[in-house]
Image (tube, rainbow, N blue to C red; front, side, top):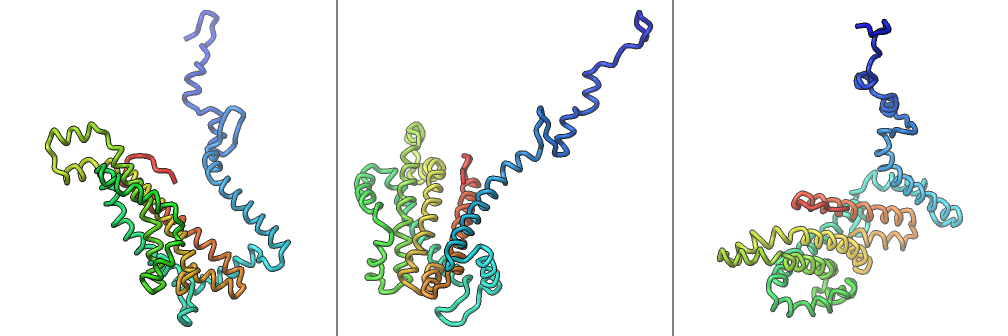
Length: 298
């Protein structure tokens, strides 16, 4: 319909913009950034660019050190050695000449045994300390006294008692892994709201019901935090313990390569130790996220 001047009315700009996306949105969808818009690639860039820059900085520092020291291998030379090493990681040419895969598995087996024993003892002990004040008063001085002791200081005791290298290394892992689990579990139990315990008394719940229905769910996030701390410590200790006790293991392998002055293999072992430790940590973070409703950071 024509208006009073005989012209058709102009289209409403709001209706026009609703039919067609804004120019900035169209360009942002293609990866372009305008002054008033934001690229959809920006979150991905911000997520991956900083780690890549950090790795690039590390490799650059490595290259600079290698350029100033003829005995220090370059990143490229180390990478070539790693390709040869991992081409056959499970060879066996004798008791002291085995592939890096066997050494990693031997270390993980010792960690699993020592860590498992520490969890079997430490978590129930933490629940008892957190639940009963008498036991807390009895064990708190012992924990405070023994926790600061270096894990390797316990290795001679293990060698004296068990008369063998493997049980001594497992003993060192056990004694260093138990404290984080005891302390964090006890703290989790002690922080259960008193209202919950009052309700349990009113309902006349048994000690088993209190443990399974109240204490365990409330203390689970703290317990998993202790487990995460313990596994990191256990992996650190096994490398040092194997350097001292010998045998098969990633720690012994590092020391053996140092005696052979094979620096590229030492650098490869350092990378392998870091990657395995990272994978163990990520596995426990995933476990914590699966069993708790709280946000668990990595």
